[in-house]
Length: 285
Image (cartoon, rainbow, N blue to C red; front, side, top):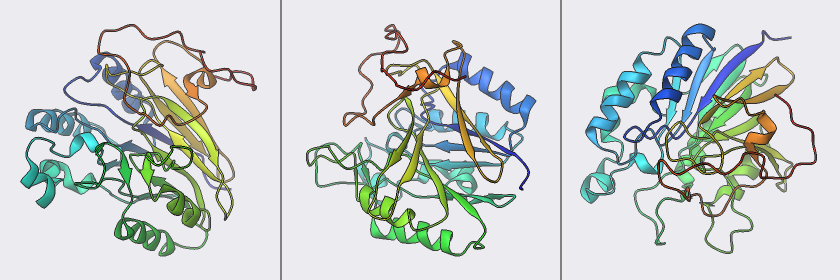
């Protein structure tokens, strides 16, 4: 059996409106626990401003563990269209070595899947879109690994497409999931919706586990700021949602990925009572 691995899965930090209390706590947890890797699944910034990226770089570079970063839709310049089209990741330059970085730790690989495009033929550009090139690159990386390797795919947008009445949260998400189901993929890590989840998504080739992390910003949706702590022992992947409010993991998780991923409240507005989503399984810590 492989050594037990610990991964921290962070998302939607949104430097610019970051929750510094939560970030200080997460950093101390990383310093104390030294997880085998940290995966950040997008939206490091709020408006893709230079000072937001500078703050993100300073915080991430202070972490003494391997880090991989997926860009999010908020990390693409929305106010400077030439740069958005020609070099959408230009402001990651200071830590470009960490963006879409494949990590391998003791038989477990973290493989990136880019779900962002500079422009889309629909009004809401915040939603995900998986291009053929992006999926081909992800699958090629997976297929190049040893046959015994297990994989966690890192993406920003959940690969949820069904049930959104033609305005799909992530276009080509269903196709991507079906392809991933044919490989040694333990799950797809993502963010974007600002609430945690752990959902088995059906595909024609079998189910794929989708694991979402909450936010570490003040832009909360229905649960407090949080991150995911994952444990892999060579046979089972467990997920615990960590938060400063002491809320149990299952009470932090939503049952479905919402079509509208925009948080419904402004910073400073109170959070709805946690535990608002009925579940059939008992809460676990």
